[in-house]
Image 1 (spheres, rainbow, N blue to C red):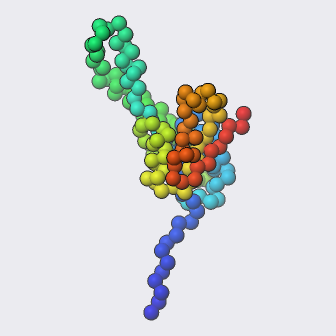
Image 2 (image 1 turned 90 degrees about the vertical axis):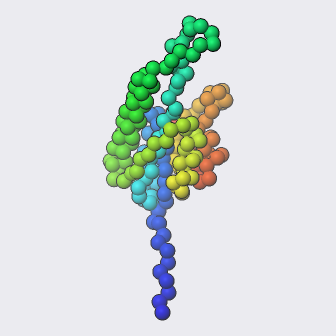
Image 3 (image 1 turned 180 degrees about the vertical axis):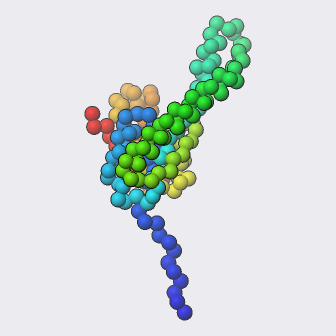
Length: 169
């Protein structure tokens, strides 16, 4: 009687790159393509996170309204903001896919909505990635204090290894 066949093993690493509209994000993607392409288990996963629609800006239209009243927010305004966000996100992913195509690397893209640092960690776990790659904005300590650092959060909270591509400038 023949021995059972070993379970199929994945060749290469399952890598996810978190992308946004920043230059450091593009650099991180290109670094991953140059340095990890031969070790990838296709496809390369590209994630972008849409922030929640900033209704705070919409409510700024209420300036001057009587205290205690909440002016109605026009549904068409919210819909317009969401559609604009979708278009920007699609353009970002199209640009990232084109960069990957130049390197001959197949990709799978997906979008999450919410707080970027939390959504990136959740997506990495959900997709069971072997490595998360993201760029660093190289903010100073004061900016990090007030704005937070997505890369720092991911390094400390993701369950997979995280590679942060630092800004070379």
